[in-house]
Structures are given as structure tokens and as C-alpha cells.
Image (cartoon, rainbow, N blue to C red):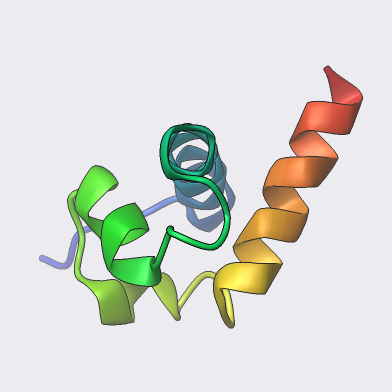
Length: 67
């Protein structure tokens, strides 16, 4: 039976972990592989949720504005 994943919940988890990576390394030194490693997933799997690093960063910035 295939694993059922809550898309929005998983996306939120990626954003939270990406925020940690961006804070530690900075935007320019962070790449998708860094974010994927923090999320325990393959880099290409991130493309199921986001089109690129810029889109992830935009979501992270939006989360920070809400806090």
C-alpha cells in the first residue's frame, strides 16, 4: 500500500527546516541539496513541493513576517 503524505503538512515541514538552513548558512551559500539533507529526502523530491530555492526562500520569508 502506498504511503499517504499530507502535501501541505510536508510542505510546511520543509519550510521550517529550510528556514534553519538559511539562518545557518545564509541564502547564497544554501543550495537545494542542503535543504534536502536537512529534510531527509532527495534533492529531486523537493521539486514536487517547490520549483526552486527562490520559491522556498519566499515561503520562509512569508513565515517570518507572520511571526
